[in-house]
Length: 101
Image (tube, rainbow, N blue to C red):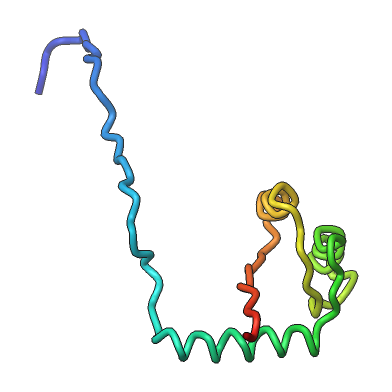
């Protein structure tokens, strides 16, 4: 127990964690040939069963987020539009385009 009523504040450096860039992501891995097969199938499925809305992706994503349309579409929003959608809490997934040789 302390009889003193004086409290002193000391200047302290905050504990700030610095992130070091990782060369390898924390994601899991599959073999390259398997990944190519999966990406090929995924791209084929999307292009067959989903509507290509092109540059109107952001507009359509907002509609889908509000329940005003189905989510079976794909397109190519700009980086700025993508960031805005993510800031609005709209969940997106970037599908790598896989070209057959």
